[in-house]
Image (cartoon, rainbow, N blue to C red):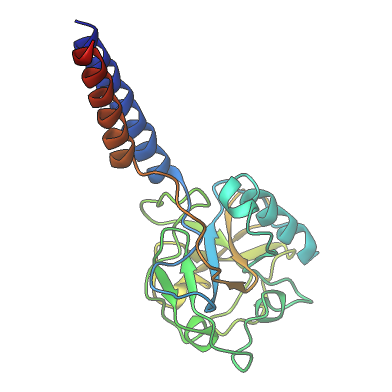
Length: 234
């Protein structure tokens, strides 16, 4: 009877662990792309869950906003990277704010769900994306069209309706064409989301992983076997 109760308790505990693990995987952002090796570099992007107006002409305000969004996620905050808005004001072009000028380098950029957005900076500003930039900071995807403040032309420079103007340029977060940055304009008093990008990150050697749920199950069953043998020996 004792053994049956122990097995039942172990099974219930294992199912609980499996459930918690599955839940955490679904909701957590992925911070290291699976197709890169130790030593390789990359950057991450996401769409902010929260929105704000575009009345400010100070790019630092938008950078602070996306940084606050990133810091709501433990995994993103732990990276210790700098986050900037993929946005332009009248005095700051997005390619300068995000250090993504075409001549700088070939760093691949990923969404926080392990999807490659573009291969390099030239690819970012060539008018098309490999996937829509519609993944929130928690790793979940947005569904449908999304108006996003950018103030930015398709080439990464400020438009005449840059952020801080009476109206601002918005992009479409569901688009993979050049409308991802420049779709239409909107009064700057409206609340809309922003795109965020990290600084360059380097893949580091993986830490020793925690026991997987199946490993916990095996350990639990092994422990029960030892208990049963001890009881039989009495």
